[in-house]
Image (tube, rainbow, N blue to C red; front, side, top):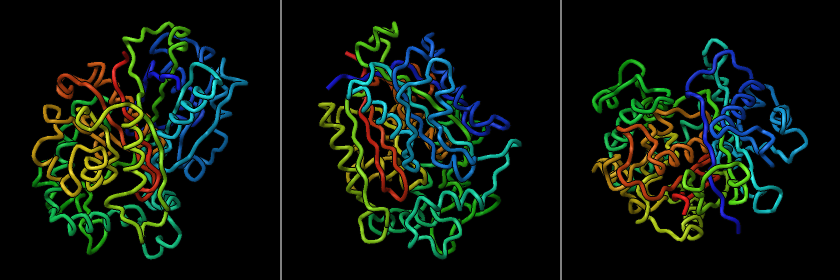
Length: 401
């Protein structure tokens, strides 16, 4: 197996891309990441692009062809991937696979989502319908907003199983809003909330589904944004003129998929997620004790708790307590979602998985904002999911040796 390194990372601010078209988004992503290390796109051998709602919201298919319009990328092996909210992570794995097969020594992974119109407005019902397509048909009936409803059920079940309160989970969102204010790319960087605000039902904060505990502040954002990453083998780094000391190694990686139907399986302890994370650790030769940086897929606050458990930093059922005890803070045992997470950084679906590795790599390189930087950042874990905790992409990162 070849060692794979992150040679460069670039992203847009998350929030609104306004009048930027899909072709322009992809072009900007490619040129932006190439400019980080001053190489032409022609220096890249392979590529992959991930997006989830490009057909339903943007009426655009064949994204690989749009990427190939960048001068220097034409005629190269490029594919588009979709794995719901794990599309970005899947794009990275797609590039890694090509490099491991010997199709090249350098590659680019791009993820993006355009969920708002040219004025920055969103059509909540249309977005809810589009996202609902990533659930099983049998679990859509009677749900106006399918995914908030499904995860409201997960939240209810987590609270009942582990004696966790709404306040425990709301505290995760509060910590992430606090973290986002230091991330210049975060969608909610100018918004701060207190635990009292996160718990009080007034204004925009309401129960999303009647009779279930999920509130507005427990939810991630509707977000435009893109992220891009250049990956390379050791030979590829030499080709790009990038020093290994300036890179982060993707030391472990794995993907696993559980059945789409949520009913009938243990979503509080998702088998695929634990399997993928375990395989990523084994490949990297590391354990959860080695990790002190993490980005987990907190599409809803309960997933911040479950994510802490999946990566092995909290025991089963104690993820919410891990956050409340301050262990997930930058100065805690493991800085989790110091970017602000999906809840406050934003959730441009196809870009999310790419941005997780990007932020984690900045942490390991000591390039995170001072207030967010984890002291002595040693190794990182990422956990990116698609659907109702269905598709899981997990990675383990460490400084290049």
